[in-house]
Image (cartoon, rainbow, N blue to C red):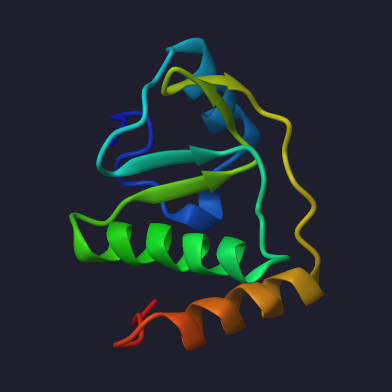
Length: 105
């Protein structure tokens, strides 16, 4: 994972941290993945989401950053996403029902 994010709790990440990823041309890695959008509409999108989260959890851990676009694996933009309470509940429901055994955090 990028040294720019090491030791920073996810709740404390700011737009400045994300802009630093772009400025430093940070690339995706085993512990860092960029997704421009959070797709949860179709069954295939839900399966893909579970696959991505499960893969991260079953490896060394890390971050999946939604709202961060990439080109050739390097941050290319930070369009952001809207993540309402309803979407948060849907996200948690998909992860909870789609990954076994359940994730602890």
